[in-house]
Length: 503
Image (cartoon, rainbow, N blue to C red; front, side, top):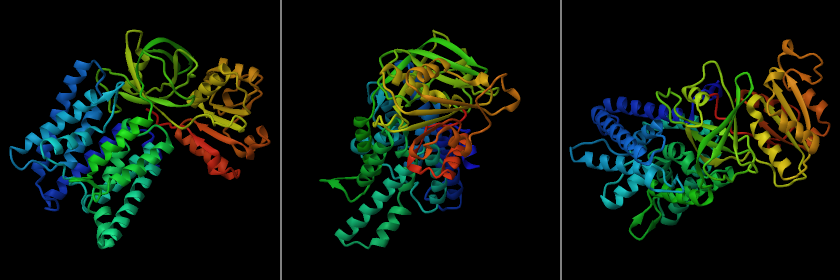
């Protein structure tokens, strides 16, 4: 049920809801004197940050001529409200003002190859600390706020599939604090309580460390990023008189992430739209520069459009094209109640400009060409497999691949040209199954019904020797996982595509 709800909300919207919830709780706690400020001062500070961040972003987006993501702006403002003490005197507005200006400016000015380097809130309070002598208090790190931080944070980590990185970060910080306490002769239990209960450890890990734009692009690199930042998070670390702080740890971690991640950000001009079936379109874009990526990876797309709904103006889509192609293919399914983003996408023409950035994902072909593979695709989840098969065709590579492709009706089978060519030239075995028995075409000789263990064993005699790639709607992928588990397939034999929801 939790996953069902998470699948229907965008990442940015979920983070925004969690931050609003935390601020709402803080105001209630402050009203009962459980926090060292009044609800009014927190409300005033938050409002000031929101207005100034929004105004600064509007101006810079106009100057730099890039689409503005209002949700991202609000998230930055609310994070600042949760880590900087609410105003007590009129002079405190100067700190809030500079933090807002620096945070939003960093997105546009502290960027290389159109990719911003730092978490905006973190770099802002690092600069104010060194230049103005004003530091973030991280007041969110209190025992009274901890349950809500954990609840909201776990939802975010589950949505982003980054629980492993968060846990590695927390474990590293825990181990380092323990080691430093032993070396310095400090009471271990008190130091651990300080870390786990009275510090911003979990807020930092769940809300800020997981920010996709400043984190590495693959799982193993993200794990290393979590460990590195966990070491830097420890306040006992210092260089001369400069002691480590959460914001400084994150900024240094961001530098590592930038060095090991793809740097490309491109503008896309629509070349054509191909209707592949009812509610299914293949968008073909001409990127402003040649993209370098691995077949099966995804990107974040930003489409500026008037009156965006609650789901915002950014989406993640897996690339259906191969890096061997000059044009970019993105296959998208549209629903009767589509978001404002998809409605704008369906109406775009050659004059519309969309921005794509953040190449990421581990759903890629194995380096060992002899590894036996099974691709299981549900609906538009065929897109990463179209990318992989087109790449293998263009590079003349043969691999032992079985593709099982699930659709409701035969009209929903897409990218038939690439699938057919891969079948003929590469020897890829393709099995189609239709889940609507009332809509079977005359002479249908494929499977009927949802995938089950019997179907897979019938199609793949050596099923236990293969690595399985699953792509499709989240509920369908979870069903595939259960089926494979019942067949005795080990977890390490299964890879899943990042599919952030029906948005």
